[in-house]
Every structure is written in C-alpha cells, then in structure tokens.
Amino acid sequence: MSAENQGGTFWVRTLAKGASTVGAATAAICGLAAAISFSGKCIAMGVYLVFFGVIILMFEATFCFMFLDIGKWIEEKSKIIRNWQKMIVYFGLSIPPFIFCGGISSIIGSLGLLVCGMSYMVLTIGPKGSGSTNDSSVPYERQLDNLTPA
Image (cartoon, rainbow, N blue to C red):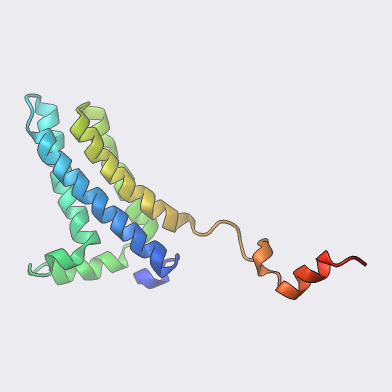
C-alpha cells in the first residue's frame, strides 16, 4: 500500500511528514544537549534520542539522505509502512526518555518524537464523521427546501 492510498488529503499527509521531520530534528538536537550530562542515564537517553531522531529523519525526509547508497531503499520502505504502524512506533520511542531522564532537553526531545506520533495519529483516525451523517453531503437544493415555509 503506497502513501497515496493511506487516507488523508495531500495537504494533511504533507503536514504530517513536515511535523514529523521537525519533531525528529528536535529530538536529535535535544539528544545532543542531553548527552552532555553527568548522569549515565541521561547520556544514554541523549544517544537514544539522537539515534532515533536521525532514523525517523531518514524515513520522513528521504530527500536529505539520497546521497547515501541506502537512500533509495529507505525511500521505498518508507512508502510501504502504514500510518498506524508509524504512529505506534513513534509513540513507543517517545516513552523511555520520560522514564529514565528528567532533564529538560531529554523531555523536549521526547516531545519531538511524540509530535511525530501525534501527526500520524491524525492520519490514522481520519476525517471526523462519515459522509452520510454530514450536513455537507446533502445537496444544496434540498437544504434550501427545508428552509422554505410550507
């Protein structure tokens, strides 16, 4: 299943990819700041955030890594992964920095990963309401007929 068939309009999918790109970059940058610490757990979570921030960046902003030999493979694989799978992985990746390191930089980096998951949650849930229950699905003429007095 390609990304075009996974629901959501072009703009919503583009916004989700953009939000995930910004969230992954935030996680990587904050991971660098968290790695400069005296606590072993915070150093480990900093390395964790940098590693997974770059991995998510590879899957969300594939054009940045096309110069690598693996860039084409990553682009093909990122189109196969479904939105709900990305959502679960990104939510799962955001949990350990909250648990193991209470530093502000690791929490902000973890929130960046959480933004990635939330952007794909919007795509997974889809539009609000179905077309049959929506008033916009009723033709305009029928709406006007209901407004005129009998």
